[in-house]
Image (cartoon, rainbow, N blue to C red; front, side):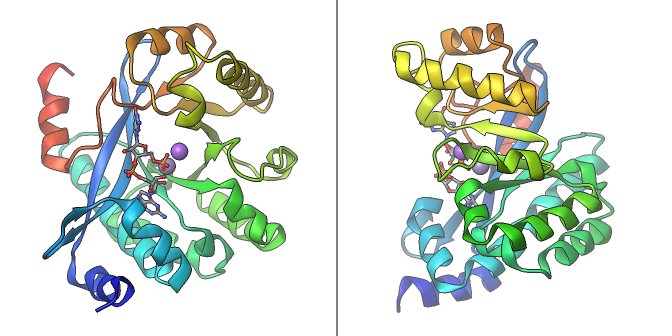
Length: 253
Ligand code: G
Ligand code: G
Ligand code: MN
Ligand code: NA
């Protein structure tokens, strides 16, 4: 059985699970949301990381059913938290093809309505390389998503075939600084220069900035001083299954 045919079944069989990595406000450490990150609980091979199957899904047309499934699970979890009086906005990574599918915004609208989750509790993370495939079509889909009221975030900013010009026409709310620039910025001048330039760019476009890959306190402090808004990274927490995240949130928060 090939990975792709196994994955096709796995999506329907409920073998995909989500872990959630918290994000915090840099200034005071308040938890302000979570990113849903998919894993595959494979019956024989154990828990597989997205790097082991998301690229194959992108190539084989399975990324759309995978994204639908992830979206449904993430919004359902968000509703569960809301029912427990916990307001925890969720971010979902959206595969490239979804941004070019005119039925995708309707799916998003329907999932939110079914779970009775306000649209602004959902952030869709998109990549620059996804937009570049067909910028006109992607722009139309993103416009429709914006009208629904979900938040849009550009993931891995600066690593793809960036066109800063897109920031003018796309109404995105958030920019995620890729961990490739962030993790070692305190010891790598080039990365620190890139981070400062991106923060400046984000400020001018009034985008909220999330620094990914913050692994130590020093990097957190430096980024906060540079005016970065939000932090996500191992220093705060690695991605956790929902029950472990609940325990973690309950500890001192
Ligand atoms: O959790 P991890 O660091 O292994 O994730 C690796 C990559 O997989 C990340 O860049 C992330 O964007 C991607 N990824 C994680 N979950 C999803 C998902 O649900 N959908 C898509 N399309 N990509 C995901
Ligand atoms: O969607 P994106 O590519 O941004 O996914 C983020 C990925 O980065 C997650 O799969 C997560 O496991 C990983 N990650 C999150 N925080 C850190 C960190 O502080 N250091 C490193 N090396 N990886 C991280
Ligand atoms: Mn992401
Ligand atoms: Na990223």
